[in-house]
Structure formats: structure tokens, C-alpha cells
Image (tube, rainbow, N blue to C red; front, side):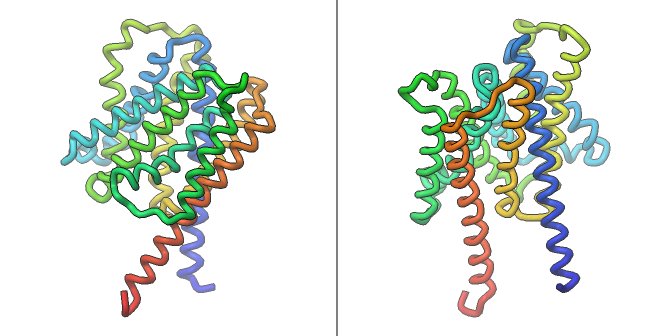
Length: 305
């Protein structure tokens, strides 16, 4: 094996490890949010998540990037992106209040499938039949989890669907910033928009932490979320997103274990089946996109390309 190949493999392995670390951070942050919904209003938890995120990003990146951190040529796009992320977070924290952690997280993973669907509708991208089948199977997986018409289904199951829709739209808007603005600028504005927009709501829902443990959990939501996103950005420096995307589904393993240990919730047989279908669909789409990108690179480099 050449030294170049070894370096590439090492970079990819490092990227995979970083993605799996990031989703552990997200899982523990979601656990903290779910626990706090028992004692505090949802808007307060969401605001704390964004405000602490903002403080951490400014503290870690401000000294290094200075004004470059806040300089943007697409303020409207950054604000829209921030609003979509805020809505997605609001829907997801609400889902955590009413649903088991694993099921809510699994349904939220509908987002990559929705991105494929929205790319066709809004960006006029072409999707081959095999990926359409994967998208269809992903929707079947969600239906298996929530089982409309059964005693399992409640209105709360629509909350992670709304989260997935918001986050899919957020991802499409993020594409418009790729290569135009620094990802660190985007992560700054994500925290800023959520903090500013929810600030007027805070006085009406303010409840001081009931204990030091609760205060620590509030801090953990923002710290783990911000650190997770920063780690993801660094992971993409080591390998393309399509190469790393399948490993983000390891989060579903963590939330199932954490939900069982912390709350005694474990997905039943039907939910596990639906989660497996969703994972298979998402992983197929991610790996298929990687193959297509590789073919495009090959064609571009060939004499007939």
C-alpha cells in the first residue's frame, strides 16, 4: 500500500471517528433535553440550547477569526437557515417530551430522504429509480414506527416529521452557502438567529434552574450541540460528506441504549423493524451518491469526458 493511500485511509478513518463522536455528543444532549422537559417549558430549553451554542462558538472561534466570523455576503440566507434550524429544534424538543428518545430520533432521520425528494421538486435534480425506491422504503419505515390507525400512533409522532421537514429544508438552504461562506460563519449565525428570535419569549417562560444538576444539563445541551457541530465540520475536512453519512446512523444505537438506561424505553419489535428500514434506506442513498460522485470524477478525468 502506498503512503498516499495509507494517508487517505487514515484521513477517512479519522473522519469516521469524528462523526461517531459527534453523534454521541448529540445523543447525550438529546437525553439532557428530554429529561429537562419534565420540569421546564420547551421554549426555554430551546433558547438555552442556542444561546449557550452562541457563547461557545464566540469563545472558541472569535479570538481566531475575529470579524471574519460575523462577516457574511448572504445575510438573508443565513437568517432563513437559522429560522429553519430553530423550528427544527423546537419540533424535536417537543417530540422528546412526548415520545421515546429512540423513536423520535429515528423519525427525524427521515430528513436525508426528504432532501432527495425536495432536490427533485425545487432544484430539478435527477434521481434514478433505485433512489426513488429507497426514499419510498424510508417512508414505509416511518409508517412502521408510528403505525397510523393503531393505538401506538399519537399526534406527537408528527413532531419529528415536522423536525425532519424543517431540517431537510435547512440542508437545501445550506447548500446555497457551500463554497461561498465559511462553515464557521454559518455555525455562528445558526446560534445567533435562534438566540435573538427566542429572546423575547424567555421572560414569559423563565424558570430558574431548580438545582445545580439541572443548570449543568442546560449547559450540556448547548455545549454538546455546538461541539458536535464543530467536530462534524472538522470531520468533513478528512472525507466527503457522502462517505461519512452512513456512520451518522450510529446515533440510533446510542439513543436506543441511552433511552433504555435512563428512561426504561426500548423500541418494540415493530419500531426496530421500522428503524432498520430507515437506516437501510438512508445508507443506500448516501452510498449511491458516493458512487455517482466517483463516476462523475472518472468521467471528468477521461479523454471522452
